[in-house]
Length: 272
Image (cartoon, rainbow, N blue to C red):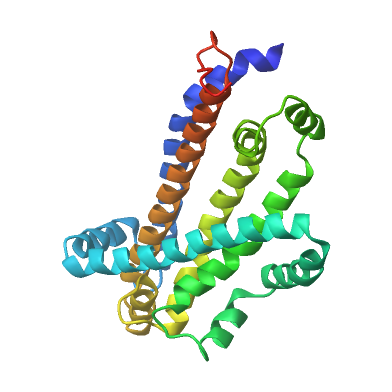
């Protein structure tokens, strides 16, 4: 088929296309900066990179970045756990579904700024970013896992029951492999939301050590290159974490495939 002969070439050219796209947008950025002619409004890429390099050699930069990263990761992990638990309970019990599902849909639909402002009344500023990240991740993971549970192959589950698979074997060999794509997609989406909402919470609440606080201070003092530099830091960290999540999902898929493969096909039959 024509499509099958072009896909390998397209995959080989993806890194080059990525570099070309990056170079194109950097050139556009440079042209816009030159057209505006004021570094205060649109700093050039070179100015921003120099500013980022100056920040990166200071201990305060790494302390601030690590603190924000820890807050976001704590909120993300709590959100993933909460979303999975909510999905299991709402698909198993109708009463829980009737009570929890509308609440999660409201949380997902409402503007994040509204929750940040409301939560400021009850939650300390240092804990607010983690809470907001948690709040934004839970509905995403819940909805994706509910879809995955609803689409599970009932025939495979019946076969597992007929052959006397225990709870653990059914979970590992059937349920987890079927749910893993939904879980991985939810985690990748949730990580991006966790970063956006967590940094937004830092910008509004301004905890002492936070990337969002640095962004707000740079805006107040008209340090536009620093605003760009901190924004680039957030984007790079977010992309790196999403890449790690996708890699981990791929490794988990491989491990499950090897662990469940029949003997003679690269798997172990120790659990049979």
